[in-house]
Structures are given as C-alpha cells and as structure tokens.
Image: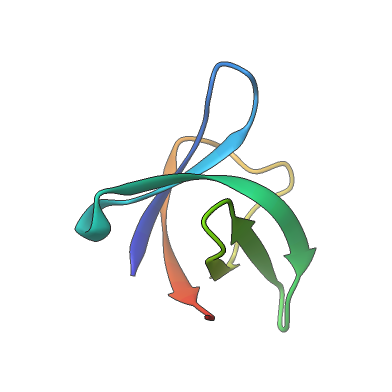
Length: 68
C-alpha cells in the first residue's frame, strides 16, 4: 500500500494512509530484513518499508507492507 511519511511541528514522524483516511504517529522503529524498517504506529499497526534514507526525508510517499 502507498503511505505518506511526514513530520509534524513537534518533530514526530507521522504515517498517512490515504485509502484508509488514517494518520498515525510512529511510536517505535526497528530494523527489518533486507534493509527495511519496521514502523509501529500508535494504533498498533506494524508497517515494513524498504529503501528509506537515514535520516528519513519527509514528506515522501513510499510503498509499505502491513505486517499485522
């Protein structure tokens, strides 16, 4: 699914899922397999995203895979 990553005024990373009209804060980040990052959102979702730079450039639209 396509998601948009952005940073709010407080510097918190947010994920917006247009198809669900959902915007949630990222509460945890961890490394995944094969150069991916796993983001845990405040609603409990876990998303796996590949190919992100360090530091993450925002705003940007990326492909994400929902893990749970």
